[in-house]
Image 1 (cartoon, rainbow, N blue to C red):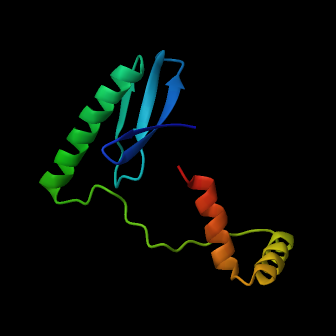
Image 2 (image 1 turned 180 degrees about the vertical axis):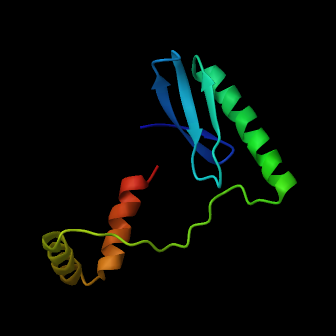
Length: 110
Protein backbone atom coordinates (compact mmCIF):
# COMPACT_ATOMS: atom_id res chain seq x y z
CA UNK A 1 0.00 0.00 0.00
CA UNK A 2 1.27 3.46 -0.85
CA UNK A 3 0.87 6.01 1.93
CA UNK A 4 1.56 9.75 1.72
CA UNK A 5 1.99 11.85 4.88
CA UNK A 6 1.15 15.57 5.17
CA UNK A 7 0.94 17.46 8.48
CA UNK A 8 0.39 14.28 10.49
CA UNK A 9 -2.39 13.04 8.21
CA UNK A 10 -2.00 9.93 6.07
CA UNK A 11 -3.53 9.23 2.69
CA UNK A 12 -3.76 5.99 0.75
CA UNK A 13 -2.62 6.45 -2.86
CA UNK A 14 -3.94 4.33 -5.73
CA UNK A 15 -3.88 4.57 -9.50
CA UNK A 16 -7.25 5.26 -11.21
CA UNK A 17 -6.98 3.67 -14.63
CA UNK A 18 -10.21 5.26 -15.94
CA UNK A 19 -9.01 8.78 -15.20
CA UNK A 20 -5.31 8.01 -15.81
CA UNK A 21 -4.56 9.79 -12.53
CA UNK A 22 -3.40 8.87 -9.06
CA UNK A 23 -6.10 9.14 -6.40
CA UNK A 24 -5.47 9.84 -2.75
CA UNK A 25 -7.90 9.22 0.10
CA UNK A 26 -7.15 10.85 3.46
CA UNK A 27 -7.48 8.26 6.22
CA UNK A 28 -8.81 8.52 9.78
CA UNK A 29 -11.18 11.43 9.18
CA UNK A 30 -14.74 11.87 10.40
CA UNK A 31 -15.75 12.40 6.78
CA UNK A 32 -14.40 11.76 3.33
CA UNK A 33 -11.66 13.73 1.61
CA UNK A 34 -9.89 12.70 -1.56
CA UNK A 35 -7.68 14.26 -4.20
CA UNK A 36 -6.13 13.50 -7.60
CA UNK A 37 -2.84 14.19 -9.33
CA UNK A 38 -0.68 13.18 -12.28
CA UNK A 39 2.51 12.75 -10.24
CA UNK A 40 3.75 12.88 -6.65
CA UNK A 41 4.37 16.63 -6.69
CA UNK A 42 0.83 17.32 -7.89
CA UNK A 43 -0.61 14.73 -5.49
CA UNK A 44 1.11 16.33 -2.50
CA UNK A 45 -0.13 19.81 -3.47
CA UNK A 46 -3.69 18.51 -3.94
CA UNK A 47 -3.48 16.60 -0.65
CA UNK A 48 -2.62 19.84 1.15
CA UNK A 49 -5.50 21.70 -0.56
CA UNK A 50 -8.04 18.96 0.12
CA UNK A 51 -6.95 18.68 3.76
CA UNK A 52 -7.13 22.45 4.23
CA UNK A 53 -10.67 22.60 2.81
CA UNK A 54 -11.77 19.65 4.96
CA UNK A 55 -10.31 21.19 8.13
CA UNK A 56 -11.94 24.57 7.37
CA UNK A 57 -15.36 22.96 6.88
CA UNK A 58 -14.95 21.01 10.13
CA UNK A 59 -14.03 24.20 11.99
CA UNK A 60 -17.04 26.08 10.55
CA UNK A 61 -19.40 23.28 11.54
CA UNK A 62 -17.78 22.57 14.92
CA UNK A 63 -16.89 19.01 13.91
CA UNK A 64 -13.82 17.14 15.13
CA UNK A 65 -11.83 16.32 11.94
CA UNK A 66 -10.21 13.09 13.17
CA UNK A 67 -12.17 9.98 14.03
CA UNK A 68 -12.14 9.04 17.70
CA UNK A 69 -10.87 5.56 18.57
CA UNK A 70 -11.71 3.99 21.92
CA UNK A 71 -8.79 1.57 21.96
CA UNK A 72 -11.18 -1.39 22.02
CA UNK A 73 -12.33 -3.65 19.20
CA UNK A 74 -13.61 -7.20 18.83
CA UNK A 75 -11.55 -9.70 16.91
CA UNK A 76 -12.98 -12.99 15.74
CA UNK A 77 -10.45 -15.73 15.09
CA UNK A 78 -10.63 -19.50 14.61
CA UNK A 79 -10.63 -21.51 17.86
CA UNK A 80 -7.35 -23.18 16.83
CA UNK A 81 -5.60 -19.81 16.56
CA UNK A 82 -7.11 -18.72 19.89
CA UNK A 83 -5.63 -21.84 21.51
CA UNK A 84 -2.19 -21.22 19.97
CA UNK A 85 -2.24 -17.59 21.14
CA UNK A 86 -3.25 -18.60 24.66
CA UNK A 87 -0.46 -21.17 24.87
CA UNK A 88 2.15 -18.77 23.43
CA UNK A 89 1.05 -15.98 25.77
CA UNK A 90 1.20 -18.30 28.76
CA UNK A 91 4.64 -19.54 27.72
CA UNK A 92 5.89 -15.93 27.55
CA UNK A 93 4.19 -14.98 30.83
CA UNK A 94 1.98 -12.47 29.02
CA UNK A 95 -1.71 -11.98 28.43
CA UNK A 96 -3.24 -12.68 25.04
CA UNK A 97 -4.02 -8.96 24.86
CA UNK A 98 -0.36 -8.02 25.37
CA UNK A 99 0.81 -10.57 22.83
CA UNK A 100 -1.74 -9.31 20.28
CA UNK A 101 -0.78 -5.67 20.95
CA UNK A 102 2.87 -6.45 20.32
CA UNK A 103 2.09 -8.30 17.07
CA UNK A 104 -0.19 -5.52 15.84
CA UNK A 105 2.31 -2.80 16.80
CA UNK A 106 5.04 -4.63 14.89
CA UNK A 107 2.77 -4.91 11.85
CA UNK A 108 1.89 -1.18 11.66
CA UNK A 109 5.16 0.33 12.92
CA UNK A 110 6.56 2.92 10.51
